[in-house]
Image: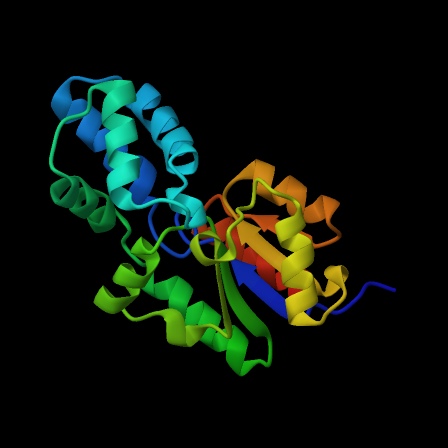
Length: 201
């Protein structure tokens, strides 16, 4: 008999909000004559290598490393603002989360983010829609480390098969499933809403 889902966790960038990190770097690359694909790849590496996304480094460390590796130009504050501006929270997703919570589901964010997530919440308050905020910046590990799923399972005090995770990244989805979680890859709004209700019915 299939277990009943009790908790639903969402990635932030690319799911709850537009993917500001990738989109912001692509825009900066285009403006500065850099390769957009390469700058995005270097950005993903640098946010880990600098320790920023795991709370072991600061934004200044991240930008310094990315400048060194790519030739990106700009002041930290200006570059950061370009990234933050791209993280546009999707109102329909926040409404959905609130509706799910009203249906007695435990809701949460599980995202590889920095303290920028707190800044975004100050600009557009969304934390209140969630029971739990699992941010790599404070956890000291990200979704590239499969043990994060075990940690969250323990914190939720649920069996893994009662947790549903929504992410736009296939690797994260695969790691969640390997850990025993149910998982749904976000591609677009229409298919997501259809697939979600199927999984919850």
